[in-house]
Length: 142
Figure 1 (cartoon, rainbow, N blue to C red):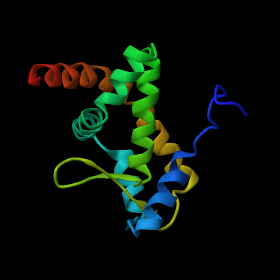
Figure 2 (cartoon, rainbow, N blue to C red):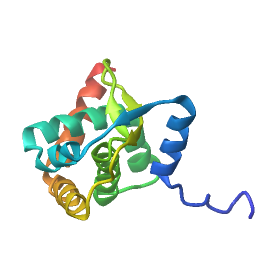
Figure 3 (tube, helix red, strand yellow):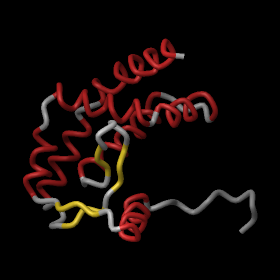
């Protein structure tokens, strides 16, 4: 492997779990959390997406302006973050910053996974306007 070779794919949940276990940052999770996420209404989902985009705005800017990413790439990025929230790897601190945890408890059932995936897939119409609003607001703050 040379320095010019791409890095091996990162298993983000495993990396987060390892990081959090080393620091004792764990959170109890139950099926009710998975069910809550899958049933989340658009208003709450939009607020969640807004928090994620605000926290990860630099990643979006890098994706679009440095790597030439397109709308599908942005949707994929936000979907990844939503999957991490759905599995409780990401939560928000008191200052609305991202906080990583290792979830402890039962994994979601196949039905819960399907419901979570369907909910995340249904967010596409919410994501683009949030990205435009958040990045526009951040530009005004500069």
